[in-house]
Image (cartoon, rainbow, N blue to C red; front, side, top):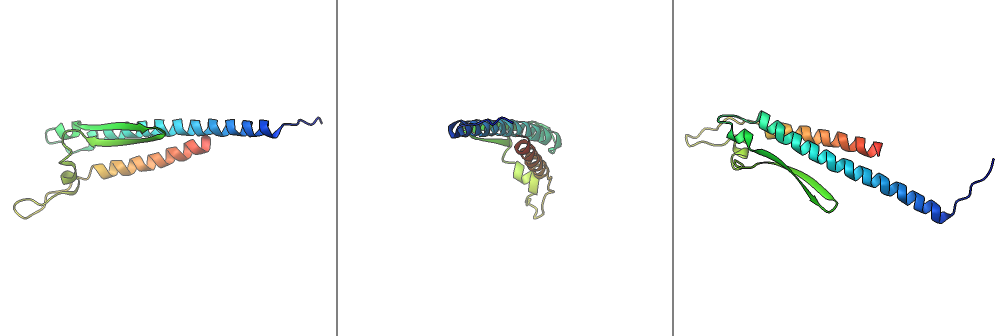
Length: 127
């Protein structure tokens, strides 16, 4: 069996290239996962939000922000943001009672967090 010798400089460069390649694949995978889950969450909120006239449900938007290597997604109601917490948790009314809560944001958020965790684990393990 013949011996193959490699210099420490070549070895360190090879390891650095492998690590850089892995890091780039993981970062790209995370960014695409953030975009996918943000869009999916906005669509789910449009489908599951309370619909009296349909305006509230129709105005859900998802937006992805990138700041250098930092990426995050936001889902928000573009025109009726003031109403979201009132519908989600209910509120006091002028007769002294409370209105019914229409929980619609929390279930979508919980599902998005679970899906994000699962996808991140898959991306990191798959490299």
